[in-house]
Length: 244
Image (cartoon, rainbow, N blue to C red):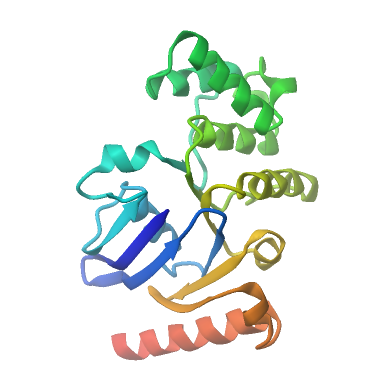
């Protein structure tokens, strides 16, 4: 489970995230929406412990991220946007390296690698260097490292960005399958992705949370695109007015 309470982040005079609060429980796929520069990635980095908040707190599985980062990260898988890897390693070598970093050895290490390869449909390219893979396979390799330790919480930042329709379908299917017993936060600006995967939607704009609802409830107010535009345009205009 994820719990975020009144979290905020300042970069100098600019307040990128302004008192955002929400929870995500097992079985939920939370679509974290917002225009570019809204504060989505900053919020996700604070939840994962890669960025210290200026105020507020985040918990993962009951552990405060700021005070107990190791314990919090044990149950967390993170797929950042433009996720890094080692291009000269094969897929299997890279996942084996990640398994060792997480403390797995011998039989358990191999079992973890095999499970990740199977879940992310990477077995056909397991012996191939990452630098030779298509973008879709590279993204799935990075996804595999995020789930290798079978975390109960997944944070996914733009997981299908730049993929073709077939590759998007594979990644979305993987997320749906894993959502049965995990709490998942999916940051994206692709509205069709939210409608295809998410059970709940949060919209952030100007660093503030402007909506927290189910896709069905939001659609009662109009198309998701229209609702998104109305909420984010209003929030951005209000923020600009306060900053002027």
